[in-house]
Image 1 (tube, rainbow, N blue to C red):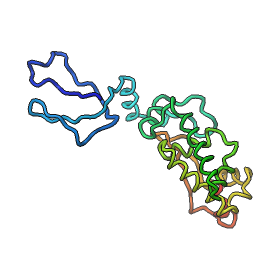
Image 2 (cartoon, rainbow, N blue to C red):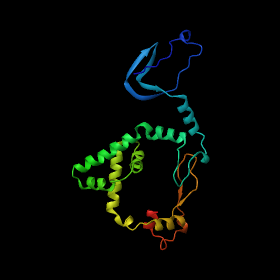
Image 3 (cartoon, one colour):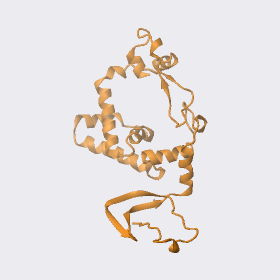
Image 4 (tube, rainbow, N blue to C red):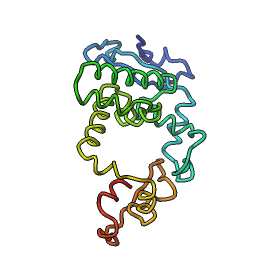
Length: 216
C-alpha cells in the first residue's frame, strides 16, 4: 500500500518538491488518515510514467492522419491507440492471451454443463482464432464473464434468424457496399473510429432488401 502526503508546512518542503502524477489502482473509501489538520485517503496508487503521460496528452490532439487504414490489415498499431485501449478497455499486451484463454476455457466449462445454448456456443467457436474472441472481450472491457454473455447472445441471434446468415455471400456483401448501403468513409475520424453512412433517401428496397443491407 502506498500512502502519499505532502509536508506539513513550507519549511519541510524542499525547493524542488513536486507531487508526481499518480492514479489509483484501488481505493479504500472508508479508510482515511488525518495529519496536520488535513485528511488523506488511503489506498493503492501507482506513479504514472512520463511516456504514458505523453501518450495520453497526444490522444487529446489527434487528427484523422494519426490512425491506421480502414480496410485491410494493420501491421502495427500506433502507440497512442495501445494506450487508449489500456485506459478505456483495460487491455494490456502482457495479459491479452491469458484473457482469451480464460474465455475459451469458460466456453468449454459452460458446454460441459449440458445446456443446449452453451453447447451451441462451443460448436460455433470451434477452430476460431484469438482475433475472434477479442472482439467480444474488447466489447466488454476485458471482463471475461460479460464477454461470454455477449458471445451467447451472438450465437443465439444467429440461431434465431438463420435466414440472415445462411444465404449470405461475399458477392452479395460486395454489391451492397458498392451501392452505398451502408457506405464507409475512407479514413477514420480523429479518435480512430470507422464511420459508416446510410443514405436512406436513395435506398431502393426492391433492388436491395433490408436483409441484404443488414448482412452487408
